[in-house]
Image (tube, rainbow, N blue to C red; front, side, top):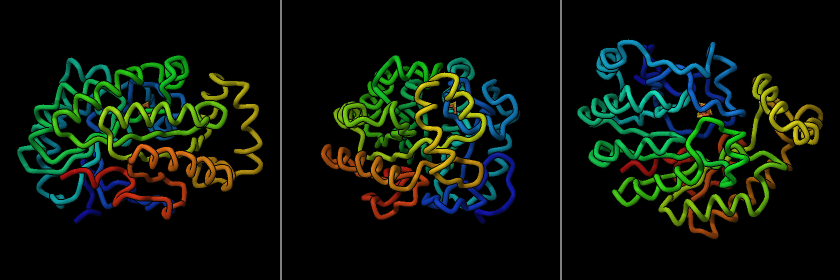
Length: 293
Ligand code: SF4
Protein backbone atom coordinates (compact mmCIF):
# COMPACT_ATOMS: atom_id res chain seq x y z
CA UNK A 1 0.00 0.00 0.00
CA UNK A 2 1.39 3.39 -0.97
CA UNK A 3 0.06 5.30 2.00
CA UNK A 4 1.46 3.16 4.82
CA UNK A 5 3.87 4.65 7.33
CA UNK A 6 7.45 3.84 6.37
CA UNK A 7 10.67 4.94 7.81
CA UNK A 8 12.82 5.89 4.84
CA UNK A 9 10.96 5.03 1.62
CA UNK A 10 7.91 7.27 1.89
CA UNK A 11 4.99 8.23 -0.32
CA UNK A 12 5.81 11.39 -2.25
CA UNK A 13 3.65 14.38 -1.34
CA UNK A 14 1.23 12.62 1.03
CA UNK A 15 -0.48 16.00 1.52
CA UNK A 16 -1.47 15.99 -2.17
CA UNK A 17 -0.46 19.53 -3.12
CA UNK A 18 -3.29 21.04 -5.20
CA UNK A 19 -1.03 21.85 -8.19
CA UNK A 20 1.09 18.70 -8.15
CA UNK A 21 0.64 16.55 -11.28
CA UNK A 22 3.24 13.93 -10.35
CA UNK A 23 2.34 10.28 -10.82
CA UNK A 24 2.13 8.08 -7.73
CA UNK A 25 5.66 7.59 -6.46
CA UNK A 26 7.82 7.08 -3.41
CA UNK A 27 10.62 9.33 -2.27
CA UNK A 28 13.89 8.34 -0.64
CA UNK A 29 16.64 10.65 0.58
CA UNK A 30 19.89 8.85 1.42
CA UNK A 31 21.08 12.07 3.02
CA UNK A 32 19.48 14.57 5.36
CA UNK A 33 20.18 18.06 4.05
CA UNK A 34 22.22 18.99 1.03
CA UNK A 35 25.65 20.51 0.41
CA UNK A 36 24.84 22.33 -2.85
CA UNK A 37 23.34 25.27 -0.88
CA UNK A 38 21.12 26.57 -3.67
CA UNK A 39 19.75 30.05 -2.96
CA UNK A 40 16.23 29.06 -4.04
CA UNK A 41 16.13 25.74 -2.14
CA UNK A 42 12.96 25.04 -0.17
CA UNK A 43 14.31 22.35 2.19
CA UNK A 44 15.59 24.97 4.62
CA UNK A 45 11.95 25.67 5.50
CA UNK A 46 11.48 22.22 7.09
CA UNK A 47 14.90 20.57 7.66
CA UNK A 48 16.93 21.90 10.59
CA UNK A 49 20.48 22.80 9.61
CA UNK A 50 19.58 21.84 6.03
CA UNK A 51 22.82 22.86 4.35
CA UNK A 52 24.80 20.58 6.63
CA UNK A 53 24.54 17.33 4.70
CA UNK A 54 24.66 14.12 6.73
CA UNK A 55 24.08 10.46 5.77
CA UNK A 56 21.03 8.68 7.16
CA UNK A 57 21.94 6.15 9.82
CA UNK A 58 21.45 2.43 9.19
CA UNK A 59 19.96 3.36 5.85
CA UNK A 60 20.45 0.06 4.05
CA UNK A 61 18.90 -2.00 6.83
CA UNK A 62 15.91 0.37 6.94
CA UNK A 63 15.53 0.23 3.17
CA UNK A 64 15.47 -3.57 3.15
CA UNK A 65 12.76 -3.49 5.80
CA UNK A 66 10.72 -0.93 3.84
CA UNK A 67 11.04 -2.82 0.56
CA UNK A 68 8.96 -5.62 2.04
CA UNK A 69 6.04 -3.23 2.48
CA UNK A 70 6.03 -1.14 -0.70
CA UNK A 71 4.34 -1.56 -4.07
CA UNK A 72 7.35 -2.58 -6.13
CA UNK A 73 5.90 -1.30 -9.39
CA UNK A 74 5.84 2.28 -8.14
CA UNK A 75 8.79 4.53 -8.98
CA UNK A 76 11.16 5.62 -6.21
CA UNK A 77 12.27 9.22 -6.64
CA UNK A 78 15.78 10.01 -5.36
CA UNK A 79 15.74 12.61 -4.06
CA UNK A 80 13.26 15.36 -3.34
CA UNK A 81 14.69 16.87 -0.14
CA UNK A 82 18.39 16.51 -0.91
CA UNK A 83 20.64 15.70 -3.84
CA UNK A 84 21.56 11.99 -3.83
CA UNK A 85 25.05 13.06 -4.96
CA UNK A 86 26.28 15.65 -2.43
CA UNK A 87 30.05 16.09 -2.15
CA UNK A 88 30.38 13.50 0.64
CA UNK A 89 28.86 10.82 -1.60
CA UNK A 90 32.19 10.66 -3.45
CA UNK A 91 33.80 9.05 -0.38
CA UNK A 92 30.79 7.43 1.29
CA UNK A 93 29.21 5.76 -1.74
CA UNK A 94 25.89 5.54 0.13
CA UNK A 95 23.71 6.31 -2.88
CA UNK A 96 25.68 3.74 -4.87
CA UNK A 97 24.89 1.08 -2.25
CA UNK A 98 21.22 2.07 -2.29
CA UNK A 99 21.09 1.76 -6.07
CA UNK A 100 22.65 -1.70 -5.93
CA UNK A 101 19.97 -2.75 -3.46
CA UNK A 102 17.17 -1.34 -5.62
CA UNK A 103 18.60 -3.07 -8.67
CA UNK A 104 18.69 -6.39 -6.81
CA UNK A 105 14.98 -6.03 -6.02
CA UNK A 106 14.08 -4.94 -9.58
CA UNK A 107 12.78 -1.54 -8.40
CA UNK A 108 12.28 1.50 -10.65
CA UNK A 109 14.27 4.62 -9.80
CA UNK A 110 14.19 8.25 -10.87
CA UNK A 111 17.39 10.08 -9.90
CA UNK A 112 17.13 13.86 -9.49
CA UNK A 113 20.51 15.56 -9.29
CA UNK A 114 22.75 18.50 -10.08
CA UNK A 115 25.94 16.45 -9.87
CA UNK A 116 28.03 14.81 -12.55
CA UNK A 117 29.05 12.26 -9.90
CA UNK A 118 26.02 10.26 -11.03
CA UNK A 119 28.12 9.13 -14.02
CA UNK A 120 30.20 7.02 -11.61
CA UNK A 121 27.11 4.82 -11.14
CA UNK A 122 26.29 4.36 -14.81
CA UNK A 123 27.19 0.65 -14.54
CA UNK A 124 24.38 0.12 -12.02
CA UNK A 125 21.88 2.54 -13.58
CA UNK A 126 22.22 0.96 -17.00
CA UNK A 127 21.52 -2.48 -15.58
CA UNK A 128 18.30 -1.49 -13.81
CA UNK A 129 15.04 0.32 -14.56
CA UNK A 130 16.12 3.93 -14.13
CA UNK A 131 16.10 7.45 -15.50
CA UNK A 132 18.07 10.53 -14.47
CA UNK A 133 16.69 14.06 -14.18
CA UNK A 134 19.31 16.83 -14.16
CA UNK A 135 18.43 20.25 -12.81
CA UNK A 136 19.99 23.02 -14.92
CA UNK A 137 18.80 26.59 -14.46
CA UNK A 138 21.30 28.49 -16.59
CA UNK A 139 24.41 27.94 -18.70
CA UNK A 140 25.89 31.18 -17.35
CA UNK A 141 28.64 30.09 -14.97
CA UNK A 142 28.59 33.35 -12.99
CA UNK A 143 24.87 33.20 -12.34
CA UNK A 144 25.04 29.47 -11.57
CA UNK A 145 27.83 29.97 -9.05
CA UNK A 146 25.71 32.50 -7.18
CA UNK A 147 22.46 30.53 -7.45
CA UNK A 148 23.87 27.05 -6.76
CA UNK A 149 27.21 27.83 -5.08
CA UNK A 150 28.44 24.31 -4.33
CA UNK A 151 26.85 22.36 -7.17
CA UNK A 152 28.92 21.21 -10.16
CA UNK A 153 28.95 23.72 -13.03
CA UNK A 154 26.21 23.59 -15.70
CA UNK A 155 28.64 22.34 -18.34
CA UNK A 156 29.74 19.48 -16.10
CA UNK A 157 26.08 18.52 -15.87
CA UNK A 158 25.64 18.71 -19.65
CA UNK A 159 28.71 16.52 -20.16
CA UNK A 160 27.25 14.07 -17.66
CA UNK A 161 23.99 13.96 -19.63
CA UNK A 162 25.97 13.10 -22.74
CA UNK A 163 27.81 10.27 -20.98
CA UNK A 164 24.63 8.80 -19.49
CA UNK A 165 22.70 9.08 -22.75
CA UNK A 166 25.51 7.36 -24.62
CA UNK A 167 25.12 4.42 -22.21
CA UNK A 168 21.39 4.18 -22.87
CA UNK A 169 20.11 6.04 -19.79
CA UNK A 170 17.11 8.21 -20.68
CA UNK A 171 17.57 11.71 -19.26
CA UNK A 172 15.22 14.58 -18.50
CA UNK A 173 16.10 18.12 -17.44
CA UNK A 174 14.50 20.32 -14.81
CA UNK A 175 14.83 23.92 -15.97
CA UNK A 176 13.75 24.96 -12.55
CA UNK A 177 13.35 27.54 -11.19
CA UNK A 178 12.84 30.21 -13.83
CA UNK A 179 13.41 33.59 -12.16
CA UNK A 180 12.33 36.77 -13.97
CA UNK A 181 15.20 39.17 -14.83
CA UNK A 182 17.73 36.41 -14.05
CA UNK A 183 17.31 33.36 -16.29
CA UNK A 184 14.03 33.98 -18.13
CA UNK A 185 15.32 35.52 -21.37
CA UNK A 186 14.81 33.69 -24.66
CA UNK A 187 18.60 33.34 -24.92
CA UNK A 188 19.11 32.00 -21.41
CA UNK A 189 16.40 29.38 -21.86
CA UNK A 190 17.55 28.42 -25.35
CA UNK A 191 21.17 28.11 -24.18
CA UNK A 192 20.09 25.46 -21.68
CA UNK A 193 17.67 23.63 -23.94
CA UNK A 194 19.95 23.52 -26.98
CA UNK A 195 22.88 22.25 -24.87
CA UNK A 196 20.88 19.48 -23.20
CA UNK A 197 19.13 18.49 -26.43
CA UNK A 198 22.52 18.13 -28.13
CA UNK A 199 23.71 16.05 -25.19
CA UNK A 200 20.79 13.64 -25.59
CA UNK A 201 18.15 14.75 -23.06
CA UNK A 202 14.57 13.88 -24.00
CA UNK A 203 12.26 15.85 -21.74
CA UNK A 204 12.06 19.28 -20.09
CA UNK A 205 10.12 20.03 -16.93
CA UNK A 206 10.05 23.62 -15.77
CA UNK A 207 8.69 25.82 -13.04
CA UNK A 208 8.89 29.41 -11.82
CA UNK A 209 10.61 30.44 -8.59
CA UNK A 210 8.18 30.07 -5.67
CA UNK A 211 9.98 31.60 -2.72
CA UNK A 212 9.25 30.81 0.89
CA UNK A 213 10.29 33.07 3.72
CA UNK A 214 13.89 31.83 4.00
CA UNK A 215 14.63 31.30 0.29
CA UNK A 216 13.39 34.83 -0.42
CA UNK A 217 15.77 36.14 2.25
CA UNK A 218 18.74 34.38 0.62
CA UNK A 219 17.64 35.48 -2.84
CA UNK A 220 17.34 39.09 -1.74
CA UNK A 221 20.83 39.00 -0.29
CA UNK A 222 22.37 37.49 -3.44
CA UNK A 223 20.38 39.48 -6.02
CA UNK A 224 19.09 42.63 -4.27
CA UNK A 225 18.26 44.62 -7.41
CA UNK A 226 16.26 41.78 -8.94
CA UNK A 227 14.52 41.13 -5.63
CA UNK A 228 13.44 44.79 -5.55
CA UNK A 229 11.96 44.48 -9.03
CA UNK A 230 10.14 41.25 -8.14
CA UNK A 231 8.78 42.27 -4.75
CA UNK A 232 5.44 43.56 -5.99
CA UNK A 233 4.94 40.59 -8.28
CA UNK A 234 5.39 38.11 -5.46
CA UNK A 235 3.98 39.97 -2.49
CA UNK A 236 1.26 42.21 -3.94
CA UNK A 237 0.11 40.99 -7.34
CA UNK A 238 0.89 37.28 -7.07
CA UNK A 239 -0.65 34.51 -5.01
CA UNK A 240 0.26 32.13 -2.23
CA UNK A 241 0.01 28.35 -2.16
CA UNK A 242 0.85 26.97 1.28
CA UNK A 243 3.88 28.98 2.36
CA UNK A 244 5.13 29.54 -1.22
CA UNK A 245 4.72 32.85 -3.02
CA UNK A 246 3.67 32.67 -6.65
CA UNK A 247 4.11 35.13 -9.52
CA UNK A 248 0.84 36.38 -11.07
CA UNK A 249 -0.85 33.77 -13.24
CA UNK A 250 -0.37 35.68 -16.51
CA UNK A 251 3.38 36.07 -15.87
CA UNK A 252 3.75 32.39 -15.09
CA UNK A 253 1.77 31.34 -18.13
CA UNK A 254 3.88 33.51 -20.41
CA UNK A 255 7.12 32.08 -18.99
CA UNK A 256 5.92 28.49 -19.23
CA UNK A 257 4.74 28.99 -22.80
CA UNK A 258 8.09 30.46 -23.72
CA UNK A 259 9.98 27.42 -22.39
CA UNK A 260 7.49 25.11 -24.11
CA UNK A 261 8.00 26.80 -27.48
CA UNK A 262 11.78 26.42 -27.22
CA UNK A 263 11.55 22.82 -25.99
CA UNK A 264 9.35 21.96 -28.96
CA UNK A 265 11.80 23.65 -31.33
CA UNK A 266 14.40 21.14 -30.11
CA UNK A 267 11.88 18.28 -30.21
CA UNK A 268 11.90 17.70 -26.47
CA UNK A 269 8.75 16.76 -24.61
CA UNK A 270 7.53 19.30 -22.07
CA UNK A 271 5.80 19.68 -18.72
CA UNK A 272 5.45 22.22 -15.94
CA UNK A 273 5.79 21.60 -12.20
CA UNK A 274 3.16 22.88 -9.75
CA UNK A 275 2.05 25.68 -12.05
CA UNK A 276 -1.50 24.62 -12.83
CA UNK A 277 -1.05 24.34 -16.61
CA UNK A 278 -1.52 20.60 -17.24
CA UNK A 279 -2.73 21.29 -20.77
CA UNK A 280 0.72 22.53 -21.76
CA UNK A 281 2.16 19.09 -21.02
CA UNK A 282 3.23 16.99 -24.01
CA UNK A 283 4.60 13.94 -22.15
CA UNK A 284 3.01 11.09 -20.20
CA UNK A 285 4.54 12.40 -16.93
CA UNK A 286 5.71 15.79 -15.68
CA UNK A 287 8.66 14.52 -13.65
CA UNK A 288 10.26 12.37 -16.38
CA UNK A 289 9.35 9.07 -14.74
CA UNK A 290 7.83 7.93 -18.06
CA UNK A 291 11.40 7.62 -19.31
CA UNK A 292 12.01 4.64 -17.04
CA UNK A 293 11.65 1.61 -19.27
S1 SF4 B 1 20.37 20.55 -4.94
FE1 SF4 B 1 18.19 20.63 -4.41
S2 SF4 B 1 18.11 19.97 -2.25
FE2 SF4 B 1 20.25 20.52 -2.72
S3 SF4 B 1 20.46 22.65 -2.05
FE3 SF4 B 1 19.97 22.63 -4.25
S4 SF4 B 1 17.72 22.81 -4.39
FE4 SF4 B 1 18.26 22.20 -2.26
